[in-house]
Amino acid sequence: MKHLEKYGKDLQEKINSAILNMLNYFDEKESTKPDLKSLTGKYQGLLRLRVGDFRIIFSIDYKEPEIFITDILPRGEAYKK
Image (spheres, rainbow, N blue to C red):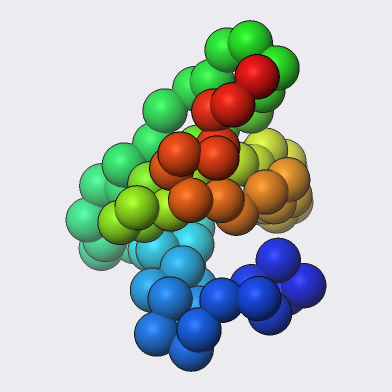
């Protein structure tokens, strides 16, 4: 995943784990509820997944199911206008 290349291995693993957890949650498999939020403003129509101090901005195609990651950013950069 190209977005993850610039981050260290520990963070990459946390982000991958959070994404897999979210997919398992939507597939109704045993999983903890992900920290998701619908976004507004410039990211209207997208969702965010919180992973520590980072935010994954994405959309979901529920038919496939597939997720399309727009950005993975530190919290302070994620919501700048």
